[in-house]
Structures are given as C-alpha cells and as structure tokens.
Length: 119
Image (cartoon, rainbow, N blue to C red; front, side, top):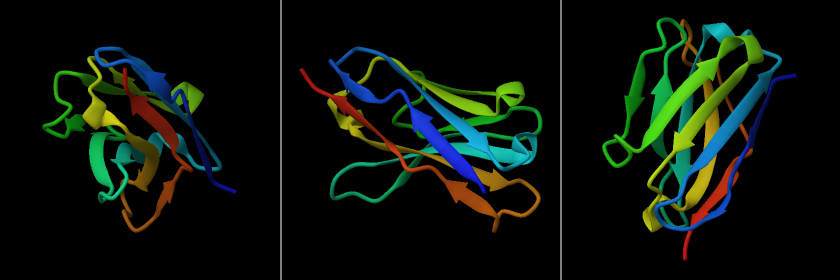
C-alpha cells in the first residue's frame, strides 16, 4: 500500500518560515520524481516545486523562486519543502506528489497539509 504523509504545516506570520516533510512508503522512493503542489480556496492546484529522481534536478514556480527550496533524502524516503519569506498568498493546502520517472502515468498523492500565512 502506497502512502505519502505530509507534515509541518501550520500558521505562520508573514515573513516567517516553515519546513514541510513528506514521507513515502510502499514505493521505491529513489526512482520517483517528487513534487509539491498547492491549492488555495477557489483556485486550481498548482505545481510549486519538483525534484528529479536522478541527479536531483529542481524546478520552481516563478512565484516561489528564491524563497522555497525542495530537497530529498532517499535514505529516509522523504522529500522536504523549506519555505522562507512566506507571504499571505502562499496560504494553501500543500500536497506531496510522487511520479514514477519512467512511467509518469504511475503517480501518487498525499492527503495535504494546511499552510496559513497571516498576522
């Protein structure tokens, strides 16, 4: 049974930081590209950041470049999202996504973790 379990969300003031974690089980983590998506109320889900299975190549949405950092620890089956200089518009549910790099039709989602940026 495949599980992706996110943690680390919460309430933070503008300008603050949070670090999200996503622990995967039931998959060979190292062969999956890993992504973080977010969905704000009334908006479509959007890709925030991704990290490849091989080489650890990273990509970011323009809105988070320079503020967010994605990383992975294959030994711990975990992907992270370090979020700095948070803004109210970063408020959303953040989802972890695993995509089998050689077969993208095989993909899995976590249940999401709420991030709220507010004073």
